[in-house]
Amino acid sequence: MGEKIAAMLFNVIFPLTAIALMMLFCYPVCKKPEGFDYFLFWILVGFPFGIRRMWMWLVPKNYGLAGTLGVLALNCIVGGIIGGFMVVVTFIRSVTTFGSIILRRC
Image (cartoon, rainbow, N blue to C red; front, top):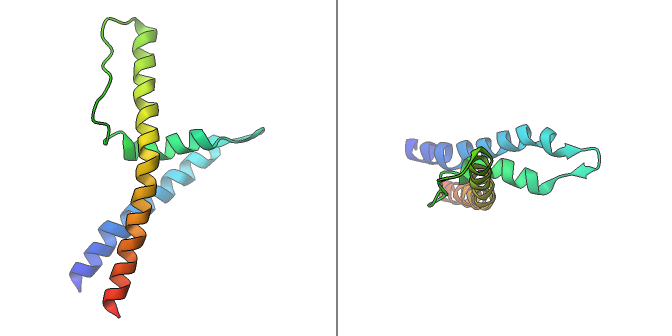
């Protein structure tokens, strides 16, 4: 019984809570008078999930301040895009884990 609760906690509740909190915090930033910026929302929500999945960081070398900040911004944007896909994968994985836990109980 404790194994099922631990699986539910770490594989379903924590990831979905993290996704929900990121969506809650990023929603006011992306809501603009001319409409909702979905691309910025995708990047901001996905950033914490994708920045650790980046295998290669572009390291600024022999650039000035503007070039260095541009390369770091590019790293953040790429990490956010990768993280957006990882949010979708994490959501699907959590839902399937929840379904398998429920079906095992019955």
